[in-house]
Amino acid sequence: MSAEHHDVSGHIKAYVAVFVALAICTVLTVYVAYGMHIAHPWNYVVGLAIACFKASLVAAIFMHLKWEKRIVRYILGGSVALMVLFYGAVAPDIQKHEGRN
Image (tube, rainbow, N blue to C red; front, side, top):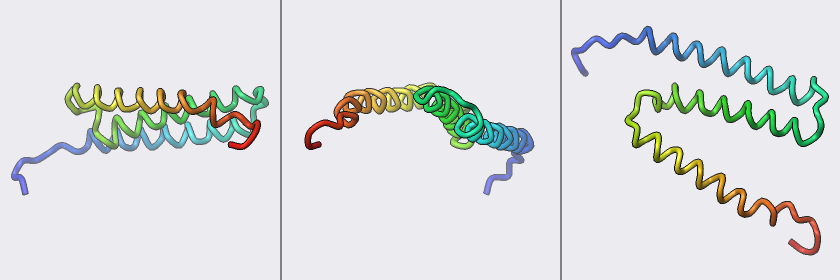
């Protein structure tokens, strides 16, 4: 064990703030899904935007990416970009409902 004393109060405040933000975003997501009457494709877009915001909060604070070196952020960003590219490449084929898939 290290003899150093680490100040964890700043981290605890960040964790509590992220927890509150996640709870608010969860309520907002449920409200968008059931309470608001948005046109069909747009409720998915809004829900996905809220989910991406929540995922970025979790990655930045709970996974400590906020305090990592810049190269780690670039690797994560490249991985997300490839995931979006691969999804975009196969999405038209998956959404096709004609014939035998």
